[in-house]
Image 1 (cartoon, rainbow, N blue to C red):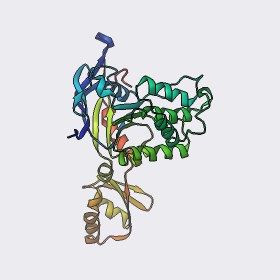
Image 2 (image 1 turned 120 degrees about the vertical axis):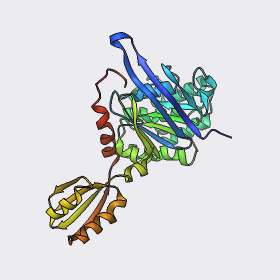
Image 3 (image 1 turned 90 degrees about the vertical axis):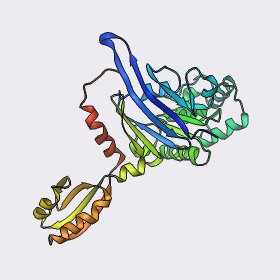
Image 4 (image 1 turned 135 degrees about the horizontal axis):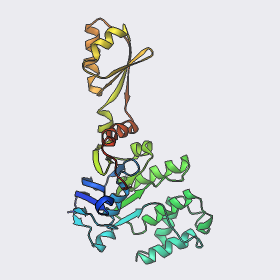
Length: 313
């Protein structure tokens, strides 16, 4: 039976340098990603995202802890890494060759050459018409599309994507969003996605993990995390009496004719009943679910107060 956990990091740490130059890029990070999901990995610059991805790919070794893919340790497990495809830190190709020729060379080098599959991938990423042009004439977005195709040449079970929408226009970003969801929903692949486009992560990911200062500060189901805290906008009168009633229990701010209460969605009946009991007139109640951006900023705010450290991208 296949392992239901595609990625498992057990208390993983990575330290660079010694003495005064010692840098803790990742610190005691434990994480599990269920197979068949799209997992978003978020963090500010220098948080430890790239270091974590390199350890997952066995490009660097953890100082402590262990990384497992599909239940097996990645350390020097070359057969296991054949189940992984990746687009990390931008796509890199032979500029003097065509896009199609680059894919053919990569496929042969990886012992996974399949001409029909190359053509299907070119079509899926929208690069069929440009496939016979030299890469030196490609835009950044076109190279990213070709990079997506290259990551899938070996028909991997796990796809690791680092900023896959970099350089793409809005239509291209939407294409990549559908493409990633298709990988999970229709092809059964696990996608580990690192991106700064939080709105895209919010729309495409099933689970999300937020890292800051090398530590995992929050993880969970995207829908559940976003619904856990909402902005409840109330148009009421009198405002001053309403403010006094609500402030002991919830953070409340005045915004013109609105009171904005930070509370979970399921607190709405309690809030409304409390105001009605106090003979407050309620004209409108609007629930605004928090965005992933708001969740991200809140989750990283506390970690940002820790002493700063060098490195750890």
